[in-house]
Amino acid sequence: MWKKKEEKKEEKEESLLKELCGDDAKLYDFLSYYMYENPLAAISKKDLDILTEEAEKSRNFRPAVDKAIFEAAQNPGERERYIKVIQNLASKTIHATEQEKEKVEKEGLTDYAASLERRVENQKFMSERAEDIINVASKFYNEKLVELGENVRREARGKERGEAERKEERTEELEKAGREARKKERRGMGRKEKREAEKQDKREELAVQERKEARGEERKEAEREERRTEGLEKAGREARKKERRGN
Picture 1: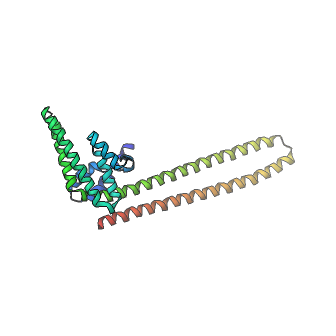
Picture 2 (picture 1 turned 135 degrees about the vertical axis):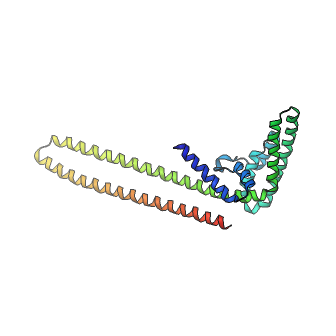
Picture 3 (picture 1 turned 180 degrees about the vertical axis):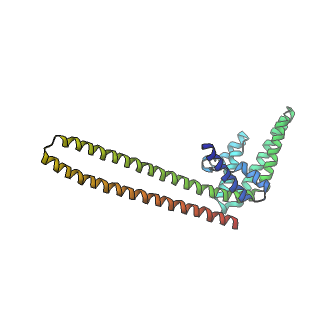
């Protein structure tokens, strides 16, 4: 079941990305490798400058590139600056990769050299299509961040619902224990006391029933609110989808 759920998520992500890339197969191939369904978890929290400095030492520019694309998507007013940042990172990656490629070619590692050549071509594409990459990433990450927010709120509602159910179960257990205790207590009573106790029990049972009905109404209202919230979220997704298609 978990596997099917993961496959559904992958299909959903692929569908959104394909929708945004349209017939641009090269852009889709590139972004299918660079986009993250959960950017908040996947992309480093470090500043871009720090990631770039670390990359220049380690020669691994991927974390810095991921950060630059994500930041560019979140800051549309600074798009031109981020285009230059991404192109600069691409240039540095190409330089580092070509140096590594020369080294492995001398060692006769032809397969690895070929993979490095593909990396160079990939970075050239990123430099040439930086603006298109940012445009799609902006729409993709905007939708993913909205979905993440919805998921967080959905989980919180699930926890509240679970806690309410546990509370109701505890209440019903206490009420049952109270009935059993009063039943035992009546066994040692005289006839008059027993009649009074039975009257009190009936009043208590009526109060218990009223409380149970009230809890039932609260539960129904919570379920109705959940359906309203899910309906609004669904409507929001559809509206954003229409808006993307119109752009």
